[in-house]
Each structure stands twice: as C-alpha cells, then as structure tokens.
Image (cartoon, one colour):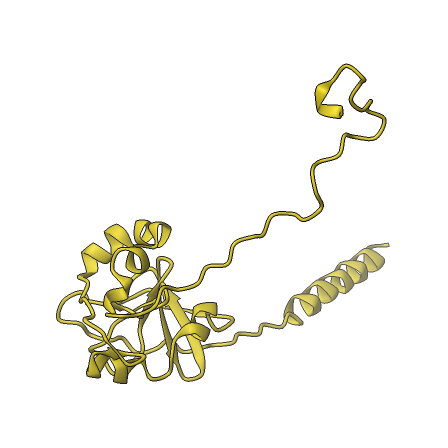
Length: 185
C-alpha cells in the first residue's frame, strides 16, 4: 500500500512539473522612436483647412491633433500626450494624416498656401494646450482667422438637408382632424 501511495505521489509530481515547464512565452519588442531634444517646448503652426498642428522647425514630422502628439518612425506611427516622452506605438495610421498635404513644408517655407499669401502664426506650446479644444469647437482658425491665408475661399460645410417626406403624419390609429377643426379643411 505504501508503495502505491509513493508511486502515485511521484506520478502526480511529474505531471505537475512537466506542465509547468511546458509554458510558452512570446514577446514582441517594438522599438520606440529616438527622442527629439527641444531646447524649449516646441511651437506649432496650424495646417490650413485642417485641425492639424505641426512642429515646423524640426526635420522629423511631429503633429498635435486632438490632444495627442503624433509622429511616424520606421513605418509605424507613435503617439503620446507629451511632445518629448511617453511615446507608444499606434496600431494604425492616424486618420488625420490623410488630410495633410505632402508639400506643406514647402508652403510653410514659401509662406504660400494654394497660391495665396500665408502669414502663419507660431503658437507657443502652453497656448496650444490651453486653447486647442475651444479652437476646435469654435472653428476658430477657419472663422476668425481663415487660417491666416489671405484670399482663401471659405471651406464648404455640408449640412443635412431637411426630409422631403412632407409633413409629419399622425401615428397609426390616431384620429384625424374632426369636422370642427379648421386646420382639417
């Protein structure tokens, strides 16, 4: 009997030990982009006809959109709440990037936007963080400043058209106007 108990204990121990050793671990290490050293928090400019802010005075592309700092590096996009740290890989390219014209740096350098004079305004870091939400909500750059582009035609905003189904009908089963109701005649 002792031999059976001893054999059972050894057998259970071997099974537990073998399943513990059979665990598999997989790690994928995605490198983070190298830091960009700024002597002071960066100033940005707004890209006309967008809500996209860009740091124009560095070689790398760094954007501020919707409260996030964005930057591409080695085929991936990274984002952070801070311009100088906390970068995390993003699983997809940001949607705003489709609206960024590829030649914006040339336009910035030439102070022209679509053939119009562009007096871009350099926005300090603290002013950006303090105001970007209200600027977006109020469409500040479009309405008040026309993105600082002289002669830029206003951006067309499409609104929902009213329904063409006619006046509202009473619910089913509801009685229509009676003969004493002047609106029914």
